[in-house]
Length: 252
Image (cartoon, rainbow, N blue to C red):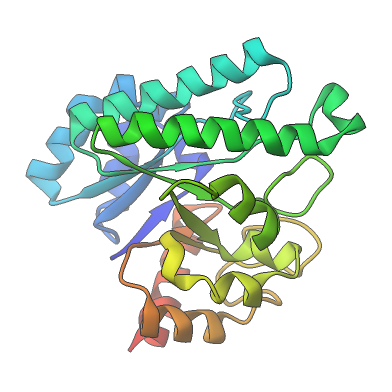
């Protein structure tokens, strides 16, 4: 199923956004922040299922949430935030949560490996926690920048090692790291897909055919080997609708 997600949706009351999204999409990946924090919108989600036939999956909170923090109290706080998201998803029967890996901050710049190791430790804990709550977590590859971990296949696979956690393949993020082809080789490990595009320099979140990532190749691989949901990550609903039309044409 083709769905949509955007951080900008968090700025608008849930029911207002729902009314607009439901005209074009039946799947919404909710970022659990702002107006859309799960603890606040449970009744709206139930109403959306009953009245609009909507389906949902969730992106765990991003703001100040760093599961790779080398400062243990902050890592534990981040884990707790993601765990609480998983608990609410279980209560709302939402089957999947996308999680960002760790970020490099503070003294972690002196040894980035520590942030990767902490991320791996957190992913293992979240894998066990999510299994107990019958909710799947997927870990997303991040865009290439000085603060990110898991921008490359090798680093993401390292933090997933020893678990059965699948990845959320983000095409735009992979494009900034020149890793699109490398990630596509692991399509069998995809549990979620985010589509948006850019010119390879920074994470622009442009329409899926507006950038240097080869959307035709990506869709060809997905059509052949992937059976999960595809989330269009857009800057707003209008561009998301345009990307959806493009994707539907390419999937035919």
